[in-house]
Image (cartoon, rainbow, N blue to C red; front, side, top):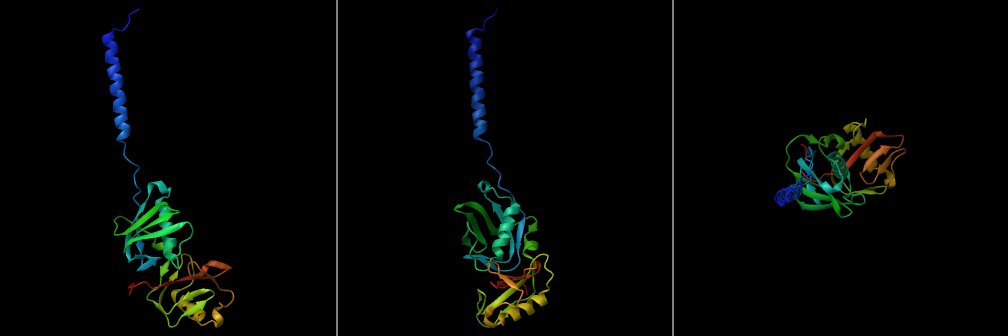
Length: 220
């Protein structure tokens, strides 16, 4: 039986050490988790979410790797936040305004996603917001419609996806609701306070339209 010489053992030890060093260097230089490259998100008109302002245009959506969100999740959340009437986001979400057209959204202090005006690639989000009616609607005096307040000013009307109401019909109905005695909606209409969406309970999707404050220059 032949035993390895000390010289051979020395070579083997050197090779093993070199291999361990190479593996350590390889592990240390492993690329960080890739940040998802989400499709661009189209904001149809100048908008606000609480203190954050979003001029009309295409936005880059960036998802924080540790958030557990997908691009689709972030797109749906941004859509939902843009629909919010009073800028108070559902718990645990908060918006952190950075500059015009740039903001971050966090969930209970943890990373979520961020958006920034100016993006390449495809566009998404607009269809989820629904159809933006042409022009703006004028409210001539401060009105409360149980219990939401509509201060004097300009508003936009949206027709949510799958709703069968026309823009003209939505304008007629909103005019009627603003003139309702005591701010009470006529039966069977109801109002979702969070998004200022008017709807009929028996057909909440098909018979709905949404009202949003006019945040600035929008579609002509």
